[in-house]
Length: 329
Image 1 (cartoon, one colour):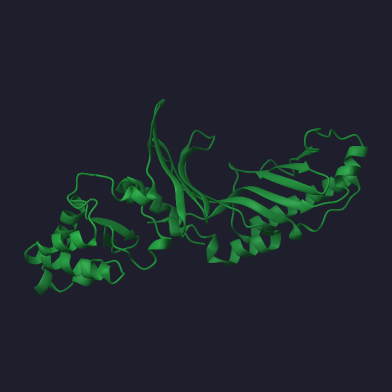
Image 2: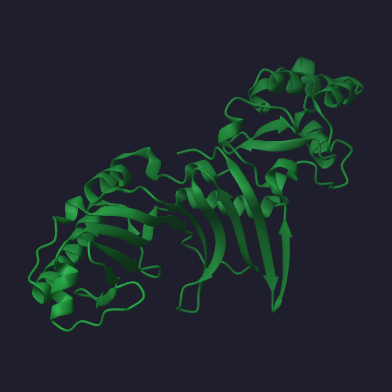
């Protein structure tokens, strides 16, 4: 899963009390946003001219850094260990270039990875940077802390091919909506952690599982628990309709929210950051009140696998695709 095809809309919302400030910046022009730097909006040829006008160790570092970027890779302090050539000037040079809007982070990790704005690195089609979208270092650091949290899922949707259930329930007096022939049923399971609602149509059943405040950690125990609750729902349908549903393993997972919650409390301003991505779906990073007087931050992506329950769970449990790591920049 990549971040190719990011398009349509980027929105950062920062709220204080009842006043909201909304700034929408299309990704294709985000790097041209003026922050007062002498390098903003420059192309590679202009960067080359600017860099070659620098003198001394600062000039030597800037020239080598740009040369590394033009080979399609980011640079870091590892490339500037030769004290006879670069002395102790690397940090000061990075600060100078960054203060003038010439650089942007090209990835996470230690040491930090950098690139000149506008240069194209290998894999750039799979990467986006929050700095390009007007987001500062504190926000990026907060986002990066999510890499240490365990991924979970919530708000799961499934689809079941089911002939006969609708007709049986209708004959037994279930309420059928005239507009779409839907029969609605709720099921709370054996506890209050999952709220399951079903929309039953003549040939299909759509299931919505609400658990945003009780997300399921991605591990074997949670997946077996979910399977157990869905099996109980299947028995519940059979009890009222006398019609057996297909095995839970064959049910189709149409959507779920993959997320991480920061385990420590968030005390800053309310915010919401969104990307509508054509290939990966909705990506959100936002602050959230979790009902116990505590606010947290949540990083989430809406996924639409449209695969069987067993295939989807195997993908989550045993594939790197269940990671949100590609968001951390």
